[in-house]
Amino acid sequence: MDQEKKKIIQFKNIVKKFDDQIILKGINLDIYENEFVTLLGPSGCGKTTLLRILGGFLE
Image (cartoon, rainbow, N blue to C red):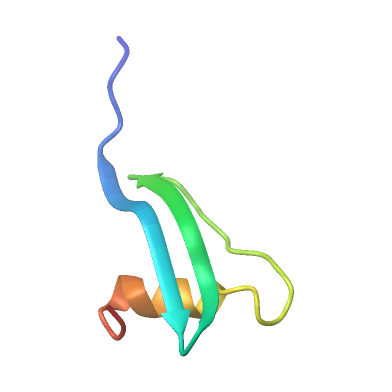
């Protein structure tokens, strides 16, 4: 029995700029129920910005 997983979060072509600096460019990410997801990257790469968008603190 093959069950299709339910998508609970979808980022589609996310772009975010502060002043004239592009912080996120074309981010696409689908997260499905029962998945464990970790964002990894160097300081300043946009991890916190993406989470702030998810939380509704940024547009």
